[in-house]
Length: 199
Image 1 (cartoon, rainbow, N blue to C red):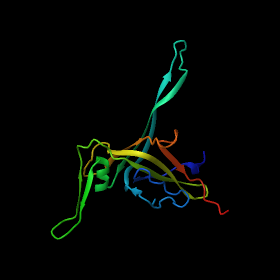
Image 2: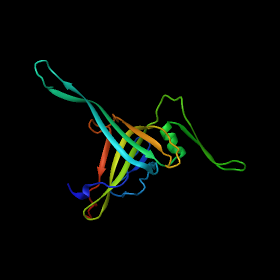
Image 3: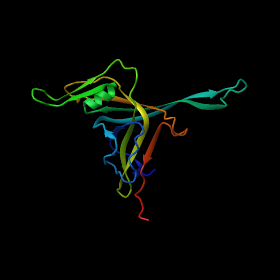
Image 4: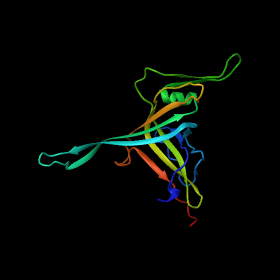
């Protein structure tokens, strides 16, 4: 393994409507705005973790002691992070709530209000992560993870303590996009490995 293949640093978390095109791998460099309807969720407090697990079913027959086959019956993709920015938009995302903003006016302070509770449906979004690695030639290239369809929920407690910053513990759970081909229905990972050529 080349040392240049090691990723270092935090990842940014982005949200967009389901079906939003990915940022262009050739023209959008690491750290650039993704454009379109991709919105950066702001700074994170404890990094970003991506988990992938499988549940399988083993096919067994009476005459053999070992399974003769195995199939995947469930896949779970979870992203967990702690959003450091306690904004109305982030709280509405985590609590599956509705954000209302009121502008300042004569005798009126500007404020955000998030209301939640009582809904059975869960809002769905596309999510993306962006980190980077540095090549042996000191070129910085992005590494991006895309989740086609997912929901987000607060994963724990909001804590307000004197010796730490408040944060929103967020868990993002992926769902299958059955409009895509089998084997490509949950997520995509892009790792840019070189610049475009001139010819």
